[in-house]
Each structure stands twice: as structure tokens, then as C-alpha cells.
Amino acid sequence: MLKITKKVEYALIAIRHLQENQDNLVPVSDISASYGIPKEILAKTLQKLASSNIIESYKGPAGGYKITKKVAKITLNDFFEILEGPTAIMDCYFQDGCDHLNSCNIRTPINKINDSIRNLFNNLTLADISQ
Amino acid sequence: MLKITKKVEYALIAIRHLQENQDNLVPVSDISASYGIPKEILAKTLQKLASSNIIESYKGPAGGYKITKKVAKITLNDFFEILEGPTAIMDCYFQDGCDHLNSCNIRTPINKINDSIRNLFNNLTLADISQ
DNA sequence: ATATATGCGATAATAATTGTCGTATATAAT
DNA sequence: ATTATATACGACAATTATTATCGCATATAT
Image 1 (tube, chains in turn orange, brown, blue, cyan):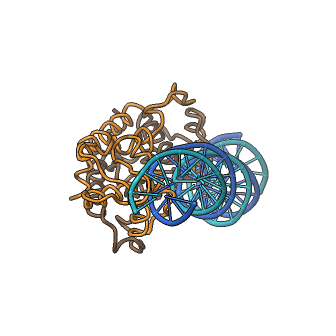
Image 2: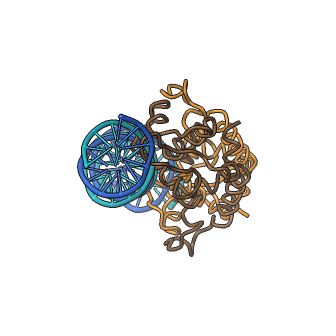
Image 3: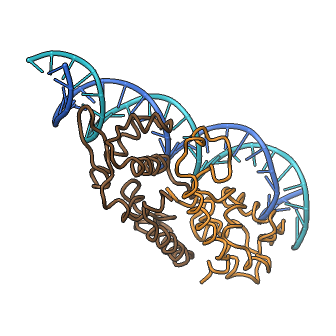
């Protein structure tokens, strides 16, 4: 439990790679080959990051991805939520419709813990991944 | 991602219930009925907590579980690790044998983040669940 | 034109989680 | 002694989430 997904892992590796190659356009195939990441899944992940303007994409030969200037200011929480939706150790933090809600006796402490985790991720940026 | 499991959720609910009923022996069926938790899965979870001396078990009619005095001093991290093994957002924090290790470019920052999460859970105890 | 690259949806394969079943053992009460 | 109630424990089934693959479309540099 409490694991990050491969999708996020791959995305973090890619972000760091792009940060180290800011002067070049890097195609997906370069990154997937360098780190042994399945190409298609990485491609789709980077597409999502591009549509969120965290990276820029250029099509065609000699195309690829590059990071945007704002990338260093993106918090890990924002990054995670772009790829995986709301950060929550239990779904009831965001979602309603839990059958047990009326009898649930741990909602308040769970929410506090969740606040702490979100706070942790809100105080780290993608720049911290490159250190 | 970053979810706690139902097993842990059920265990936390049970611990809080037992804390609120410290004077009685509470059978599994009481807890499972009160919160709509499948009995067998809760039973096995409480057995694990009993074998770790976090709660005490008494067999036979009028038997059941009660918390031990040390329960308030058990950290959430210990609790999680009893039920789910090592707390780590990526397996490579504890395990070796990652194919990508030689080329991995995010190991250091991931480990720092993991330290932070473990630190968070090491500074909360089961007593904090009852507040 | 062609080769190379991203964009996107559908679906398959795998793994992890969650839940169920059966049986054994202990013990209080009758 | 017998019965009813409770924990102990292993094997297995069902469900869900994650991970990976496939096919086709679009853009563009050469």
C-alpha cells in the first residue's frame, strides 16, 4: 500500500531526464530506451503532461518533448493529481457515497493524516526531483 | 495510488472501537456488524494484531479482543508495517533487484520523500486515531 | 512522398487487493 | 460430557487496479 504507480515513476524519470537535457528536443523513444520503460505507456503519460503544459511537444522528425520554464514551480501534489487524480489515502477524503460513513469512527484522524501528506507534497516541487 | 488498504482501514476502525470499549471483551462479530466489515477478513487482521501483542485475545464464549496498555505508544508506521510490510512509495526503497537501478535517476529524491512519509507516520501513534 | 514523431482510444494481460470457505482449537456454561 | 461461542489459520475465489499492447490518426521536417 501507499505506493506510487509506475506511470508516476516513469513520469518523474522523464521529467528529470528532460531537465538534464533542456537544450534538446527529446523523443519518447530516447527516454524509453535509456531507462527500459515501455514506449507506449510513457508516450501517453507524456501526452498528459503536455496537455497540462508541464512539458511542450513538437511533432514530426526531430520533434520530441522539452520542459517548460514553469516546471520547477509545479508541486509534486499537482503533478501527482494530473496523472492520478486526487491525492488521498482513502477515497472518502474526496468522494461521498461511503456506506459506512454514518458509523465511521476514523474519518477525522484519517483526514488529518491526509492533510499532512498533501501538505508534504505541496511543499515539494519538480525541481526537488533533480537534486 | 498512495492508498491505504481496506485491511488497514478495518484495523484502525477496530482499534478505535476497542479503545472506546476498554472495559469489555469485544468479539469480532460485534465490530464487523457495527461497521459493516466482512467478518472473516477482520478476524484475520485482528489475529495478526494479537500475535503482535497490540491487542489481547480470549477464546470461547464471552471471549473476544481487548487492547493492551501499550497500544497508545504504537506508531502508525509500526502498525502499518505489521499489517502490510515496509512503508515505501516504491519497492526499491527496501528491495534490491531493480533492473533499472543502474540507470535510475530519481532514486535519491524518491528516498528523501519516503523518509518524510515514514517520519510522518513515526510521529503519530494509535492514540492519535482516537482524537 | 516518406520517415519520424506525437495524439488518442480500445483492449488485453498481469498483479494486487478483497472476500469467502472449511476446519481446527479453546473454553464457558449447562 | 455436550453444546454453543469464540479465536486461529490455511487455501482459494472474485474483484479491482495497474500495467502493457495494439491500431490508427495527425503533424511536419527532409
